[in-house]
Length: 147
Image (cartoon, rainbow, N blue to C red; front, side, top):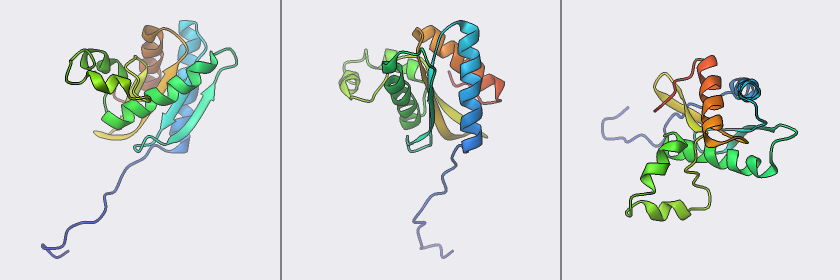
C-alpha cells in the first residue's frame, strides 16, 4: 500500500450466529437458576439485532428493554449499569432522554481477544438479577466481563 494512500474501510469483527444462540441458551439457564423469566437480545458491533428470544412468561416490555440494553452496550462498549453514575452528571444527563439509552444493569459488550464483537442485553428480572444472569452466561462461555 502506498504510504500516501489512506485506508477506506475497517475490518469489523462480529459475533457469529452460533455464538449468539449459545449466549441465549446460557442466559435462559442462568435466569432459571436465579428464578426469573427473561428476554435476551444479542446485537452485532453496529447494534443490529443478531439473535433474540423471550421466555413465555417474561414481561412483553422486557423484549424492547433487552434490545435497547444490547444496543446501548454495543454503542458505547461499556456495561449498561455504568450509565447510572454517568447520567447523574449534569453535563451527561441529557443523554438519559435518548429513547434507546438504557442506564439499567443487564447489558454488556461482548469482548473476544480484546475486541468488541457485539453486545448482550437481558431483561425480565430486577437489575441485579439481569446483571447476575448476564455475567453467569458470559462467564460460562468464556467472554470477558467488563466492570
